[in-house]
Length: 238
Image (cartoon, rainbow, N blue to C red; front, side):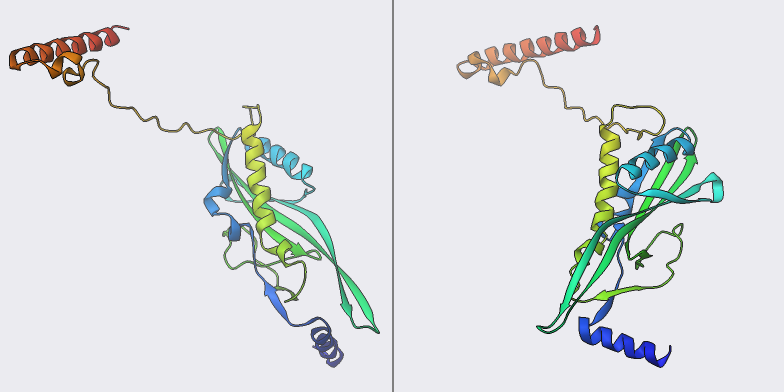
């Protein structure tokens, strides 16, 4: 690095405070398994569906890469907001504007008549993707770390929360849509729990049980057994 570059960096640190690295992603806020969907139809159907959903949110497809096992990786990018930071003293004031956006990676893998979709999102600062400490193997390696001032007012925008909420919102929108054709999520039925059958007659709950002697109680028990048996047979015959 040249001397004047070092001097400039020193001036920036003095004027705006200390810098540190930003390392975040959707996975910081959203468990990996909640970023996996199974969609009906082929990968092209899923790609069109995601392109529609991302486009509505201001993110456009910028790249497509073929991967192993017939999988395809799509990249969506877009800007979210512009933040202006004003610094200075009573005698001198300056302002800088930073653009915050997102990059989403979507891996679509064919699985029979369905498509497995895996999503991963990262914030961007002035067009540069931030790195993350952990990321799936199918996501391209990070180019270089992105730094920001410790007191920068845009830190809440680069935590990975916005990307996680975008992924959650898209899944919810797909689940609520009336469509059940290609590009729609596969709905897995919840396991049904069967309640134990209740006897139709419980002798001890009968009004006569309180005042009955031993012989009468035996008769009440036999009556309840017969009623329960008759109820089971009637149910089986339906």
